[in-house]
Image (cartoon, rainbow, N blue to C red):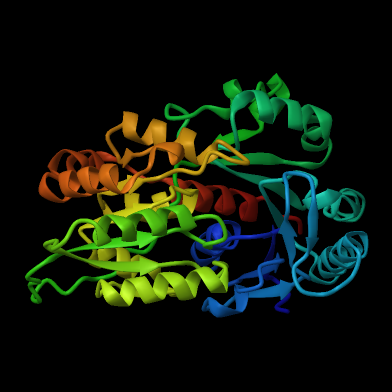
Length: 390
């Protein structure tokens, strides 16, 4: 380790899905630079499938799967959940003690999954008093009442007050204001920085190749809970006869294998290209004329970056995060959406055809939208490095 290096430790608990690790990697890729080392502690079972830039690496913890909002079980190893959490807790603390970060960024949960970050927060407070500790929050966590109740029960305000330097909200205050919605106390509100949404790298698209047909991309993130979207979309094609657009379908790596086989058989009959997972989904999005998706934070950031029309089918259980985001984004003219319980092949056909035929208004609003997340975080990093410990 270089004597003047600046070390950033990032914690991403990652249970069942791609959202946390993808957001963490997007931040890491932007913050890394000469003299900066970034180490990610993650429970994602597919972290190794992503390419890491020079200066970024990861430490893998045993994965956990969320059964309910409060029940988590080990993803692979056959041990009691308490033992798996104990192993994860020790990995986080040992990594921190060895790495001695100047900046510690915790994703979403102030105390970590099942309080697994608390020993590390306490050790930093005692042994690395100059280290900055940041909580990174996506724009929307859940509906206001549920979030207020959850934060009060888990005493998150006290944890933020005692152990955190700042809270970074990866969103815009005028779209959704968690300070107001989640009733942050004044001293917590003073620690809160709205970074804006996190842009993604925009891949080059070959404009010299002109397609005869428009293209729709259907993607459901990790795939663990989006079968209804894929099923209804294929039913739309199965009952619609000939269509004048092509479809690429990304099912996600966590889709049940029996359902994947069933969907793959149906997709082949319809000449739909279907894949479980691709590393650089941004390239696939860039080539599409329309994206049908569930509307998680990362997917919508990618669509904002690409100025791409989207039809969102947001999950509303166990959290209403995706539905609330779809509503506020549609209110700004950034997407259209169908409620989860309202999705049918007929309504899908109507929405898809409408967005393919007239994407103009949506594209104009997307062009006007500015994404400042990485710029603001880089400014905060420059400030921290300038005032780093000797």
